[in-house]
Image (cartoon, rainbow, N blue to C red):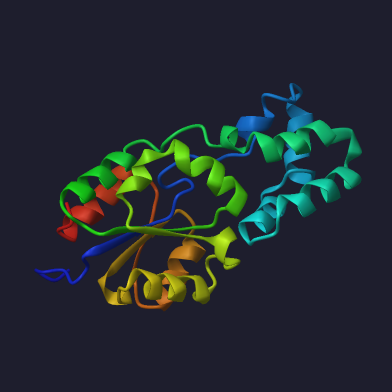
Length: 205
C-alpha cells in the first residue's frame, strides 16, 4: 500500500453488498412445505432464470412462458413479478452507514448492478441511500451484465473516471475479477467490517 492512494472513487454493487437479496424470502411466505420450497427454487423461480431479467429480458415474456411450463404455480410466478421487493428483506448490516460516511467525506459514489429494469424501477424509490450516488449503471437498462467487460467500460465512460482511480465492490468473485481486468481495484465483499478496513486503508474514510 502506498502512502497516498490514487483511488478517490467508489463503485458499489447493490445486491448482497448494500441490500440483502434472496428469492426464498418471498416464496417461503407462499410455500409452507420445506421440501416443496426447495424444489420450487431449484426448478421454477431459479436465480438462473431470474438473471434473464437482469440481462434485459422483459417480464412480459418471461412470466407467461414460465407459467406455461409450470401452470400449477401460476400464482407464485405472478407473485415474482408483482412482489419482487419482498425478496429484498433489508440492508446489509453496516453497509449503508459506510455509504453515508463516504458521502459526507465528499467521495464520489457510483453503482454497477445486475438488476432487472422493471424491478429496479420498483425498488429504487424505497432506497433513499441512492440519492448519495452520482450515477448507477443498471444491467437491465443497458442489456449488459457483469462480469462482461462492456458493462465496466460503459460505467467508466459514463462516470467520466479512469479505472485506476476506482475501487469496485461486489459480493461475487467473478464480478470483482471482471473489474480488475480493466484496471480497477477490486474488493470481494464479505461484510461491512472488512470493507471499512479497506476503505480506511485507502484513506477514503
